[in-house]
Length: 372
Image (tube, rainbow, N blue to C red; front, side, top):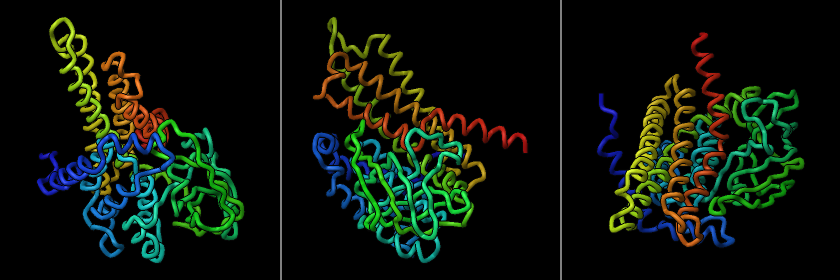
């Protein structure tokens, strides 16, 4: 059995890496982090022109008509570059929600604009420090075509033009609704983020016009389905960042000398980098399983997605932490890039729910499967 990606898929990945190497060096991420800009508009336009925003969207809706195996490889390169663009919010979440639950009219209305980059989308589900495992955390209300409540934090909520919002209908059942964020009755507040290169916002809805997305009464099931699909794509983005952090750390330790030899030659550092490599490869194995399940719409997807999310979150966090430590004293300074990886690792590890929550999900899903 061949677990490798095809030559055509690897070409897609190489093209993405080459483009980002030229247009999205770490100085681009740093420039957004150190300024008031929420994202790099030029890079976002370039991603749209390259067809990345609609990689897995059928051509009839303005997409490239490729597939999820191509999309996850693009996501890996976006993560490797620490690209400061709303890629995950718009592509993994809003676009996927429309593909999973949208009507034909909704797909035709929104997907072409999302694919072209004209419209930025997001998924608004969190309400503070909520437990995403329990539908009871939702208090935002959708009744008679109007939405009332608050979502915080919302990734890229300050720049998005379209939000998919998790709410409760008049009967108290969870539902997904589409909201034009340019409509009346919306208050947006930018939040101070641990990683300012990826913006966060508070969205307050006060009788805001909205429309139902998907089947009534199935909102939480649809939400979990979208989250599972996003978890696989996010896993590859996290692996890209983890791999880059390990490579950068290796290069630094090879060029730093102590007692007349590279510090990378000392056994203690070798062991620590080997531990990072093992965590990365374990995360990659789980992500590959998730990519297969996503691309084939397999019944295993909920379990595979949880494994991918856990492995990639752990790998990126560990790689970024060790990057700081193995850079020695300079690893803690603003001038070095270690904190860029650390910030992104911590942010991506929380935006879809923490690894601890996904571990609980995995346990529940395995128990449910074994009991069936």
